Image 1 (cartoon, rainbow, N blue to C red):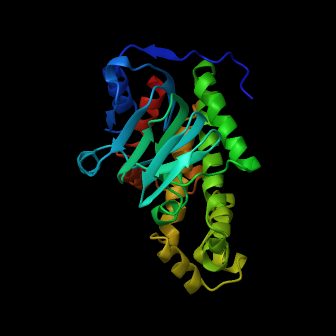
Image 2: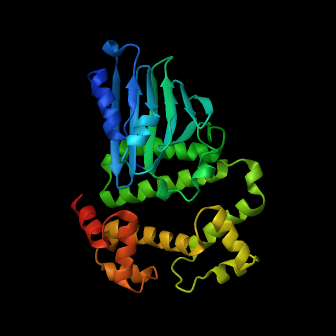
Image 3: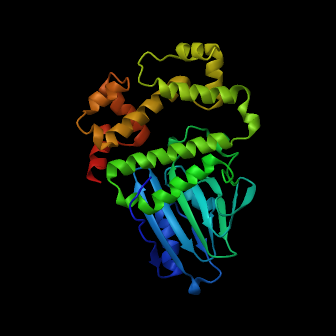
Length: 316
């Protein structure tokens, strides 16, 4: 647990300022209120690497991510996760809608239109946003969970909600290195919640197997000898069937392994605990023997070289 005193919510002095704050913190959004001249709000926020987290207390309002805003957006494709703390709200995306009450968690996708309406009473909510690349479920599977109430009545949902609540108030008080790990742990917990929330019918057959395969790959990523044949043998399936499972996920086996290794390299390049390790050493640790090839691959994924990324993280 984080034991630092929670940072206070900062008063926002007008609806216009609130609207601009919401737009600047996340992705471009359309924000409206029936009483803009008598609007009260307060917020606190923190950002660590890929995770943005905001706690908002506000009078009734509506937030919309319209088709036009989605089309015009240059933001990195991301997911947002909301925890309703006080009051109630309504979320609509992908042809579904749900009323959220205290303790409910909802996920929504910034690359598709959505609406959040808090129009009956003042509310308090926590919103976390992080890139899609940190989630190991396909877009199609996440789309089955958007605009649904997740985790309210189970221990896992309570755990995720508790972590989000703690992070929102105390993230600024911890060191950068600790905060980075806490942020990644929070995203990992959300990953588990999303996977656990998939309909029971998805627990059978190929999709359940692919989840086990994902976990297996993560456990053996450091082994340079990992091959499709080894993975298939470990799960008592043919290599052909393994490839068909990954094809249904929209990625090849080799590409998935490479991407996960790149992500591990990125984590270590950003982590102060690995500051004494060279880029070459970190790359080799994750089975990239050719540092030039590693740098090209890293840049193709993140838009900058490993050295540029590490330098930027060090300056923060």
